[in-house]
Every structure is written in C-alpha cells, then in structure tokens.
Length: 179
Image (tube, rainbow, N blue to C red; front, side, top):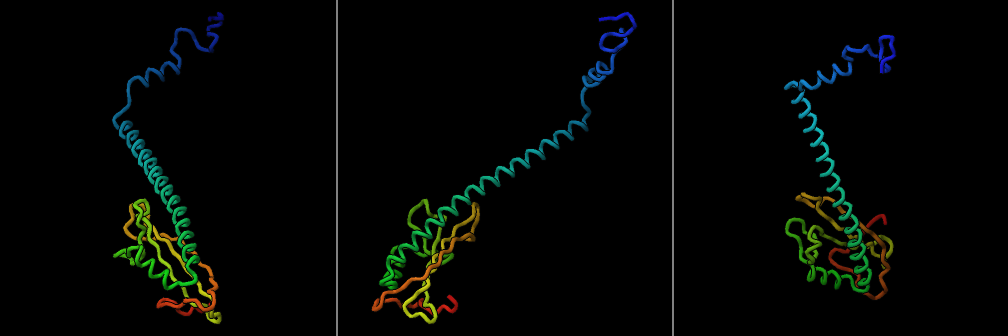
C-alpha cells in the first residue's frame, strides 16, 4: 500500500530494496568453507557430549539395579546365617559345599547365571566380654559395568545371641573388640 508521502505502509521507500531483502539475498550466496567446518565441529562436539551423557546414564542405571540386588542378596544371606545360629560351623561347611569360591577374589559365587556379577562373603566373631554373642558380617560384592574387579559392596552386620550349649566356635570365630 502506498500513502502518497513516498513511503509504503511498512515504512519503506517504494522502489528501493529493503535491508531485510538485502540480507536474504546475501544469505542465499551460501556459507564459506570455514563456517561449514565450524558448524560441523560444533555438531560433533554436541553429539559427543550427548553420547557420553547417555553412556553415563546407562551405567548408573545398571549400578542402581546392582545395588538393589546386592542389598537383597546380603539380606537373604544374613537371614540364612541367622537361621543357622544354632550351629554356625555346620552352616560354614554347608556354604563351602554349596557355593564355589571365586579363584581371583576368594569370595563365594552364586550358582544362578543372572547373579554372575555378584560375589559374597561372611564371617562371625566373638564379641569381647559377651560369651554367648557373635557379630555376624555379610558382604556382597559386584563389578561395575565393564569392570574387572569387585569394587562395590553392600555390608550388613548384626549381633546374634547363641543359645547355650550350641556350637558357636569355628576357625574364623575370633575375638572382636569394640562391638
């Protein structure tokens, strides 16, 4: 629309190119090689960062699942140990018979294939000054994803009252000062 004062309704002088039109024509000429290389470099860096974030999120998800499984396994093994409080040496022999020892770590291995990343260990000790009480320790270890060693663990400890007249001593039943 033209108002007659030499300017269009958009505030431009008719017949002369606007700066917006000039910038569109300028952008149609294309980008220089340097601009393309910089843009591709930024895209590569951004994709690398996003890929690393996804990898870290997956790793942490696996570790969270293993922590939960490890806590449940430690609780289960602690309950088994408590159930055998009347004869802890017999429980120790049963464990040595039913669970294979891992060659590299000397921890016990679970037989189930889905529990292959896990190892466990237990010990019981006399509590100094309390003849009928044992401190029981159960630890469950697991590997980090893509890890070679057992670094993470869940440890449970409890005190057991051993019924009088029961077998509570064994070769690993040593004094535990403090608790």
